[in-house]
Length: 458
Image 1 (cartoon, helix red, strand yellow):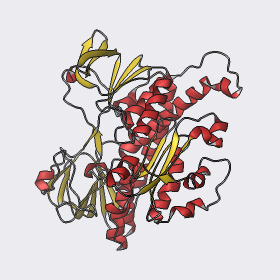
Image 2: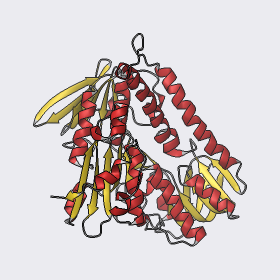
Image 3: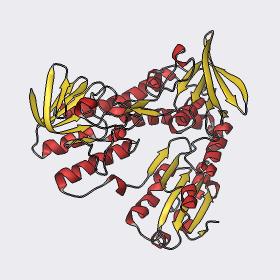
Image 4: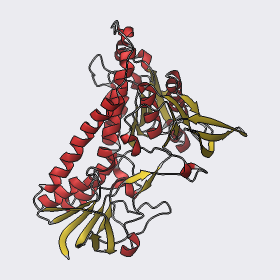
């Protein structure tokens, strides 16, 4: 039996950073990884997909070269094998970096294999049984495959298996009109695929405000993507070498026939084969490990970090989980999950940056508020770059003058949103930003202008 001070199961965004902190504090650490080091972000999420987004943007911009007075002779082609090779190189470098850093870390021993709890403080991996007073679970999540009739009889792709694609799907059907599905939809449309997106909800990305959903749908349709909303998938079947998806909309059943199918309907935690019951670790009805505000499970000495705890589904929330655990354990600082502010991005082109409350959430709260919006076509930086789709929106509490939230859908929206996010964390009045002098020409320079034009939210 191998005794350690701490065991970390999984090497996503929380685990490796915590291993370094614990080992640096003189603790004997065991890290367990059953497959790829780096977790979802490095292998099938942020790193490879944003690399694909960059390749797709290059193809899109090349086709628009004439708009900028640039002449390119002949049609624009996309070498999918080269695209995949570039993606693999970028993701591979990150994965190898994580693995190397852990295997060379003093005080850390890496075990490669599948971990399962034997008891509350015992974990088996291969032929070894590890014990520790502190155990940290960082096992992530995977694509949810819904019980659609016929789905188990047809070949389908998920965000993970999409990483193996080195060819151009003639017609890609995407089940799910939310963040993952829309990014892949636009990417493969720009590579040259015919693309259809099917969404059950009445609109795309239904957790966003209606004006955001509508604008995203508009620019995706403008690029030639077939968007089907308010459509329930009632069956899937093979038709020769093609795949037929039967959908019910407005009481009528029809079908979309394509060559490849991507299932991007949701995520599920990788907790079903860890033996959590043998450790007495509680999970909710969807399999997420239940944690308190400091990420402690119901079993003393065991924490859950990252996607598997249901308290966030992003790389940045996972990393913040590490910061919370490390602060409480090692720095004696009281940090909590409830301290963090909602913030994320949708990496379509243009991207959406989101922070704080949506307009719908502010309205639902009933609090008196102010709002300001600006079309990206009125932003000189966007106009100069020829990328004027989208708009910016800021919401402010009328009484406290503190910023409640923002939605920046447009050029650099995923970066500009941090101006708002920082202001929310500082709990500073909006006048601080209103009086700031920003650099011209940038997108961010219009934030003070917008704040100066706040009006009551009707």
